[in-house]
Length: 208
Image (spheres, one colour):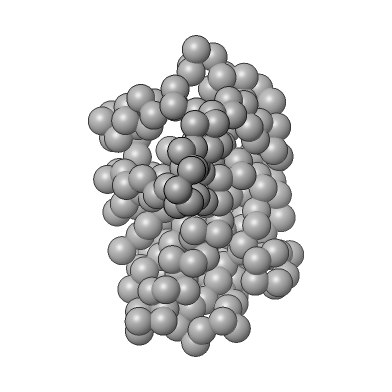
């Protein structure tokens, strides 16, 4: 199965959720690879403290032709491998819309039970929509107290129009204390977080 993990904006915890899911699946005997598909603000290499000199970008631009050369043991569990995003390119959306993505994923589907893709936030770039067709399910991370309720109808639209496959919401950082109701909605959190300003403005307008 191919699972993509995304969010509306930056800072909602999608990379952490991606990592924890990958570790959990590996711990129950599944062979898993975590792929850094957020080419704008990659984090997976930082979480695992591994090099990001080569990764997804290297294959997409043709600098590396052997996918296996981009796979690194996680050092967390023998069943978990990692492919980092690689150097940040000037044209992430363009790269992720080519057939090279299919070429990248094909050998992985043959060798792993689960492919977990940590992708860009949906409201900041079109990257995630470009690779959605390769996913079996989308885990959409929403951070408690950070989410703007005006984004919810848009997420529903992503699902209804097929832009994102089989969307399941993951509510992150929930405070279960007795007096915590979570009514803070910080509209605009995360904009400019390593993503194009022009794309940010387009998505802001769509929400209004």
